[in-house]
Length: 75
Image (tube, rainbow, N blue to C red; front, side, top):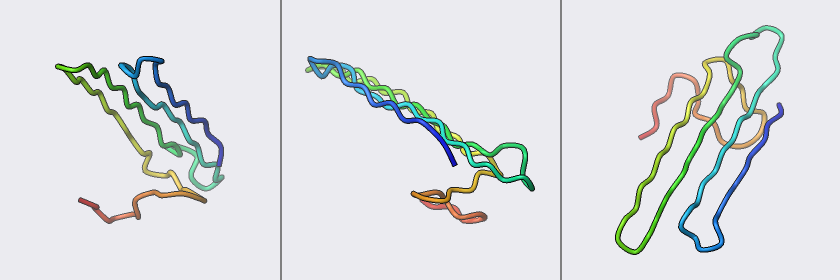
C-alpha cells in the first residue's frame, strides 16, 4: 500500500482542506485498488462553504487504517 495526504490551512484560517490518494497493490485484483478524496472549506464570520468528495475502488484493500468492510454499509 502506498499513498499521499496533503493538509492545507491558510494563515487566516479562511481556507482549510485535505487531499489524499491511497493505492493497494495486489496481483489478483489489478483494477480499482484506490481510495481518494478531497475536502475543501471556505469559512468566514458570515459564510461557510464546503466541498467534499470521496471514493473507494471496489478492489481496494487497506492493510492499515480504516476502510469500510466489504458488503457492509455504515451510517
